[in-house]
Length: 148
Image 1 (cartoon, one colour):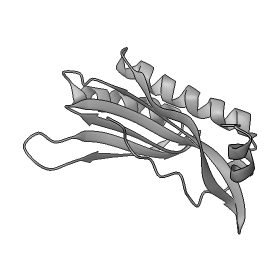
Image 2 (cartoon, one colour):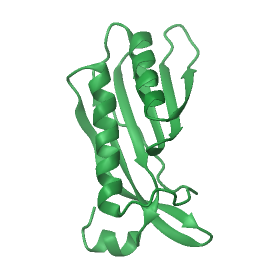
Image 3 (spheres, one colour):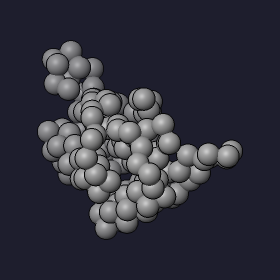
Image 4 (cartoon, rainbow, N blue to C red):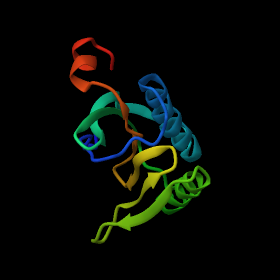
């Protein structure tokens, strides 16, 4: 189960990172987040290159990374653990829940070491994804040169 992540954002550069550091930062963030919930994670997407904006009319790049695994018996506890971990990293979080008899729980985040993040505790399977902070870079050139 892959979660489509929108990578065309209006973020602003505030990280001081280069593209290599941005890529490593999102891998570190997502892998650290999966460690909080336990083993069994597989790469769902990425880390892949995406477009973003570092300023007025100035393009940049960010990296998107997602991991997936089967659900556990206690999604509520897993959401709480991930949220606690993200808050320790300086991420502003917001919990959410779908309607219905068997709701999907989750927490999304912004700030700290990431532009955005999401943990979706679906009874059919879990997904944790994130987008790195936006850094200066030429998406088209990097894509053509295979610098993902």
